[in-house]
Length: 97
Image (tube, rainbow, N blue to C red; front, side, top):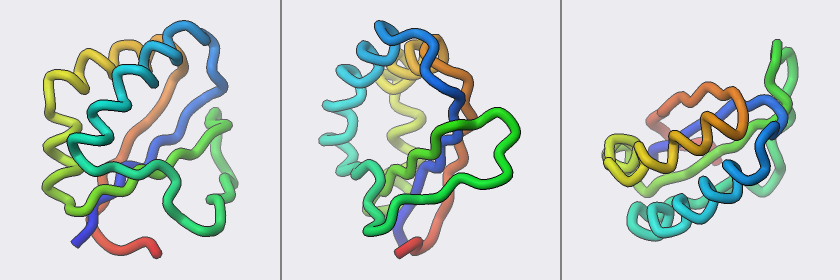
C-alpha cells in the first residue's frame, strides 16, 4: 500500500530557506522514490485556518514514507522547511488515486 505525506503550509516567508530545503529534498526524493503532487487534478485547499499551500508527496509504500521522514538527512532538510514557512505534515497509508 502506498504512503503519502500531506503537507499544509503557510505562504513562504523565507525564500532562501525554501531554496535550501528544495536542494536538500531532491536526493531524498530520489532515494525514497517520492513524487510531489502525483494526482492528475491538483488538490483544492478549503477551510484551512492558516494554510495557503497543500503539497502531496507520494511514496511507493507507507514504510518508505515513514523511513524518509525518520532519515537524519530529512531532519536537516526539515530545519530549513520550518524556517521557510509554518506547516503541518501528516503521513497516510492507502491509495489516493
